[in-house]
Image (tube, rainbow, N blue to C red; front, side, top):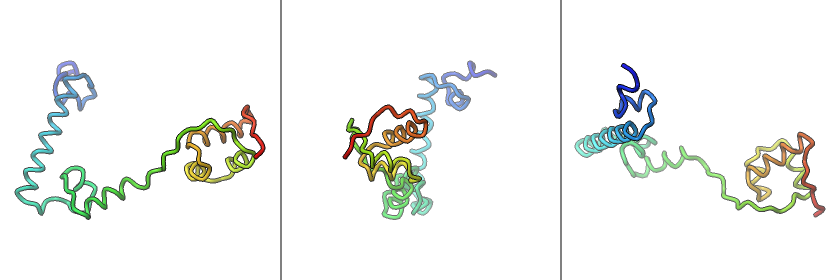
Length: 135
């Protein structure tokens, strides 16, 4: 049996086919599984794994322990910084070369992660064409 024979089925999706019919079949199976899970949880709430990320995602439980577990699993998200085209000061260029995690450095400087990453890369290569302006 080849993948072509399975095309349009959920099994075809599991074998790696990502055509529209296979994707739709997979989505339908996942929806059926979730509906079955929710029906079982409604009949017997004790089967829901409370205080877990699975309880929040797979069982749609929104109790405090499940919500807390889900929030902790997502971790602290970096704050959004709007990209700017301001020039690097000599002090910022010096800070970029320190052995500090890039995300922490980007937050401290008010720059994007990619801006700090690029600046560090260019300075290490010695190819930094952007001139730092005196502050």
